[in-house]
Length: 325
Image (cartoon, rainbow, N blue to C red; front, top):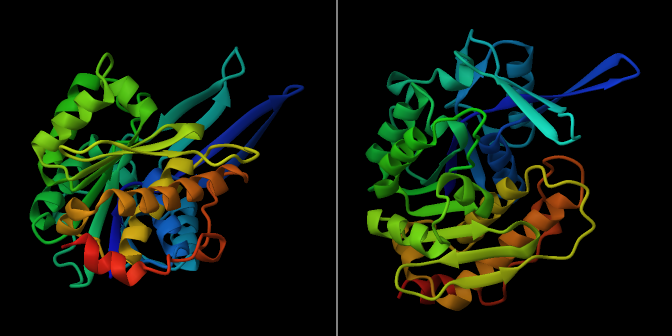
């Protein structure tokens, strides 16, 4: 089985000024890029669909994906430049972001660039971040989701970026277009607080279930995560105590691990996800929380490898059989 990850791969440029001297450090990133690497490190056959520039940054991104074992046959090479997210500090010392992305390679994918046909063993498609809402790539992703939803599980992480999508009303309308095809929605409590102020998580997820989702998972940072399902009580998994270095990429590692564990069980389908019982949901959630905690324990978006994670439960084959009865 394999997973196709769709979206942006960009460069985060960390800029600091010390004693009048400016220093800059480029770091390869982007939420879908991180998810793709996280999946590959967990032993999942993974490929990436997105616009990659022919510039030096795009070449570095492609090289890194290949080195991590991520397939790039569906990546679309472009003469357009790589998006750069400049990360500095404001006057209060808090991170400040400035995106230089208009017209860049990752945003310029259109419907004509969609893979004509996916491999038969592609069981899931991952989408997320700002490429859900900027054109023309948003329309291309929506067309892909609508084309493939009947055959493959669609998992979406809104990973909201207000600095890129300042018009939240427009973002909500665009995001709603994806809901009927989304089997899994993974979001952070921070995302929901920005996108749906004043609404409880129960209210938000109820709307998503009414639109067609089978499983919604909300991460709560160091507190852990909660899985919501239609007509069922939420499943809570507490966070893992770690010495946090930073939280960069933790949510992406969580998303990758969530899907990887379902893949290990052979349950990467809407039917498999919808039929999971409480015990199995809890186990999958625990695996994802552990992956996020490991990522937080080291610098940058550095997701864990399979050897660092808890082994498959002794009853994994039973899970496969029982979960879909």
